[in-house]
Length: 292
Image 1 (cartoon, rainbow, N blue to C red):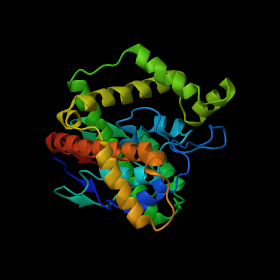
Image 2 (spheres, rainbow, N blue to C red):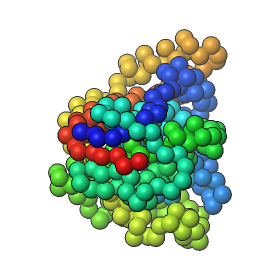
Image 3 (cartoon, rainbow, N blue to C red):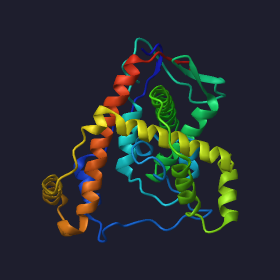
C-alpha cells in the first residue's frame, strides 16, 4: 500500500511504427556504437539484462554509460515501468522539483531510501532523456525526471527486498566477470579510474552495485512471470517485419538483415511485460511511504 505518491506519470511509450522505422533503417545487422572514451558518454545496458534496461542502477548505470545498447524506445518503455505504482494511490502529492531533498525520500517496508540514491537515479534518468535530445533543464521535464527517478528508486528497493527474502545470491566469479567486462570498455586504467571518480565510486562500490543488480536479475529469472516467457519465434518476427514494411513507406532491408534486432526487441517487450507483473504484485504487498 502506498501512502503518498508522486504525480506526473509519463507513459508515452514509443509506438510500434516508430520503432519499426528505426529498426528497418539499419543497414548493418548488430550495429553498435563506438567504444567509450572519457568524453563520450551514452546510457548503456551493461549489467542486468533483465532489469537495467527498464530500471537502471543508479550510480552503476551512470558509470557504465559507455557503449550504447539502449534505444530511445527502451527509455520510453523504462518510463512506463517506472510509473508503476505512481497512480494507484490513496493520496497524491506533487514532487518537489527544486531545492534540497530531505535525507529520506521514501520508505519501503520500513527501509528508508536516501536522497543520495534518488539523486543517482535522477542523473541516470536525465541521461536517458538527454540521449534522445531532450532539454533536461526544462522545468516540466525536470518534474518528469524526478517522478520517474523516484519510482525507479522505489521499484529497485522493492525488488532488492524480494530477492533478499528469497535468499538469492550470486558467486564471486559472476561479479568478477561483469567487473572485467565494464573495465574492458575503457582504453586504459587512467580513464577507468577517472570515470570511477566522476561517478563517485571506487572499485569496491562498483562491485557492490554489480552484485546488487545481478541478484535482482537472478530473482526475476526465477519468478513465474519470467519463467512463462516464450522465446520469440521467427513467425512473430516476420509479422512484426511485415507490419513495419507496410508502414515504413521507404526502402527497407531484407528480413534476414534485421531479424536479430527484431527478435531482441520483441524479447525485451516480453521481459518488460513480465517485470510489470512482478512489480505490480510486489508493490501491492509492500508498505510504501513517499516523503517528498
